[in-house]
Length: 207
Image (cartoon, rainbow, N blue to C red; front, top):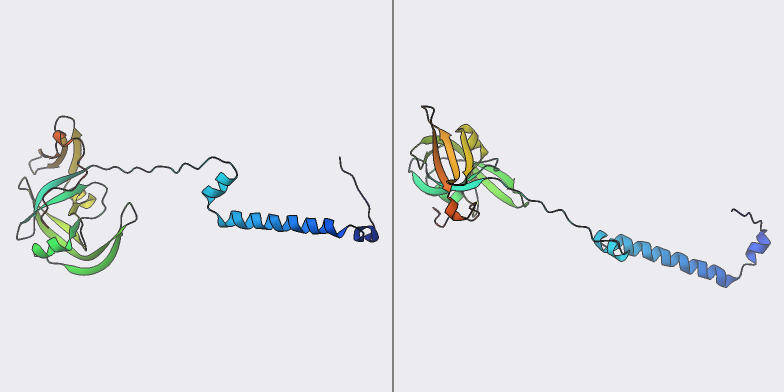
């Protein structure tokens, strides 16, 4: 129900001063509450109102990985490279590029990873000859990274050489590629006795 009350200016001015003062106090308290809510974290604000804590979504990322032995450059420098189906580039550490005497041209780029960390790319080695453990020879473009990183054979390497990564419960993770005669050569890069996917770095690296 709505009720309409008419007051003259004279009556309004007769309102007790303490009542007006109380209204001002309430107004100031409301302003302080708004300031405190604006300054607090969203999580804290919800908890202060008795609401349930927000459950942050858990993000998982998975892609087939494994290490394989290769020989790089004309010097046939031996290293263990990480085969990564989620990597957009082929990467090699600057130290290995120097040791294997790769011909490079300078560049300046930043590579951002899954966890938002960045790696500096300082050079590019084009048509770098590599030999797989099976003896197969091919060429690859390597981006040269500064710092402690793995040599990574990414999606360009897999696509250019028609290489697949497959998983077998008996043989483990297998890297396979097609030979000129049409047969597919298979190489295990993570065996079942390794207790699943290999998630750590190789024990011996050519650094």
